[in-house]
Structures are given as C-alpha cells and as structure tokens.
Amino acid sequence: MDNIISGIRVSQRVVLVTTKETGITLSSSKMLSENWVEKFTVSLDDSEKIERVRISDVLIKEKVSVQDYFKRLIRDIQSPDERTREYASEVLCNFIEFNSAGFDLNLLKSGVESIVKQLRTEKNSDVELKLAEGLFEFVWYGQLQMEEEISLLERLTEIDSFHIWNYMNDEDYMKISKVKQYIEMNKNKWQSRYDNIYKK
Figure 1: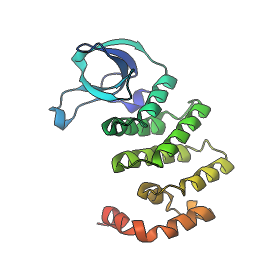
Figure 2: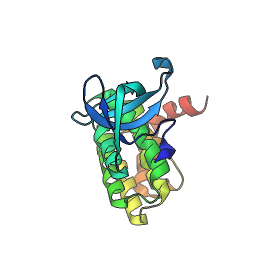
Figure 3: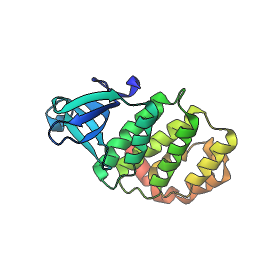
Figure 4: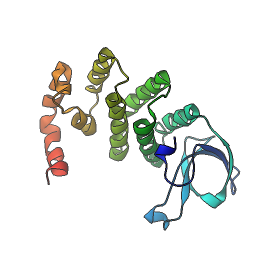
C-alpha cells in the first residue's frame, strides 16, 4: 500500500489529540492552501467525514488491514459531505491503480458496484472524474471475464456522465452496440466539452 502515499506511512488507526476522535489515516501530503504543512487525511470512525489533521495532532496506533482501508474508502465516497467525497475518491483512484494486484477480487468487485452506484447520483465533477478514473483502472487491470466486462460497460451507458462518456469513447469499447449507441447519442451533448479540454 505504500505505493499510494507520499511521505509518512498511512493506513494507521489514530486518535486526534484535541477531540479524542478516532479514525484511519488515508494519506499524508502537503498543500499550498495549508502553507505546505504536512497533514494526514483522516477518515473519522464515528462519522462519514474526512478531516485534514497536522501530523503532530494525532496519536498513531496500530496498522489497519488493507481490506479495512479499502472498505473505509468505499464508505467515504458515499458520504453526504462533499469534501469528504473529494478526498476519498482521489485516494481510492490511486489505490485501485497501484494495489489491485493480489487484492481480494470479490471485495474489489463489491467496491466497484458502490462506485457505479455513486456515479449515478454524483454531482461534483471532480469526484465524478476520480470515480470514473478508478473504475476504468479496474477494467484495464483485466481481472474481469469478458462477459463481466461487457456487462459492466453496458450498465455504465445508463449513467449520464461526461467522464464515463469520455472513457468509453474508444474503438474497442464501441464494438459493444450499447456503448456505441451511448457515445453517438451523447456526442452533441459532450463533444464540445471534450474539445475545450483536450484540443486547445
């Protein structure tokens, strides 16, 4: 799991010094908006919320399993708190990209189902992008049988999403009739946005 982080180790249980709340560290990083102070991204145990906390303001406890870490990310991408979904979707995308090898496939598939469910209702474009990116990292990893992959791609055509449309706007995917129909049906809606982003 160290592939997905920068700096101090994460996936640790922690206690926040000031509030005594407990949680799991999802990542550690420095941000310009936080004056480049290294902070943990902490997923709180008792609420579907992620907070940014100074390294010095947590007591580090035991390491959590990779399965529990993944389950927490899946919980947090479905949080009613928008900032929490932003943090969780970014970490989840990195997790799927770098940690799919050897991971419990059934648990990964269950997580993918939760991603698909969230994409059906997600209104935050940044979250939508990261969830779509993570979803297709899973598809590209090649763990699915062909029938499973086609079924998943066909279900994605039910989602009104620019990022899904963009990822599926591919020669190989468009060999699937439902995908081709989805791409063509939404071309007028999404093509200009695509051109503005990628053809400047």
